[in-house]
Length: 280
Ligand code: GLU
Image (cartoon, rainbow, N blue to C red; front, side):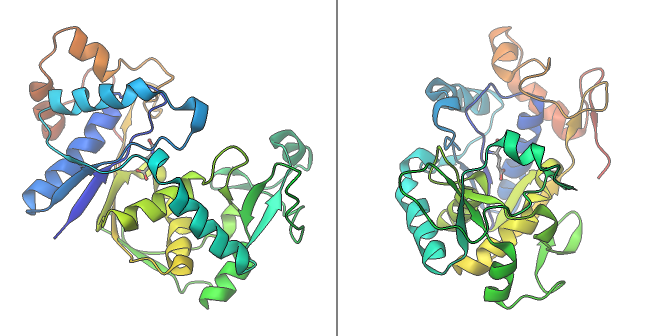
């Protein structure tokens, strides 16, 4: 049975792009007799606003969606800690206390997600008296899973079979200085724990899958299929963003707009003036 999910972070209000994504995940599950899950990704400590989760539920109901809610990330911290302990034991994580500024000063090369960490702290040992993030030693991790270049794959309903290569991202953070997991570790573990079979999310997160596939191999997790849908763009061709000027779903709701009618228009590909769907 197909299980999809919508996994918003409660650090701002939802906008049309989120509505499109949630509708996509919801409709796929409904049309295939599956389940649609809501997971609140509140790993972000002080940037997570507890009142936003309630707002998100109201937004989804207003759009006419039905969902099953699974536990929020803040209730799963021990599962992240356990996974990180295992990776640490296997010598696959190393502590890094570098600040963003220090990394920028090293003039790192640019990877798919910005600056690539040059590995300065590789080989250093955990010092409990110094706050540090834990980074994945990607070369060791690939050796551990026995995957040579070009041997890890994922199936994407939109893009077809993809070769996963996490190396261009460098040694990504799996445990943050301020949280027991980064997005990569938390989302990968959660999707497995929630039985998600189809990870439905925007094309803007496509590149993350290179890393998530490696984590699944390392942690012995089931491998889902992905559906990276095209994302909505504003009049400047930029992704709609919580922090930019796109009106939130909560604002539209408060203004008396009909959410179900809006959802129907989004399904038909009819977007408000200035908003377009990126070509995949
Ligand atoms: N929490 C992420 C976000 O709000 C979504 C993560 C995902 O779908 O994998 O951007």
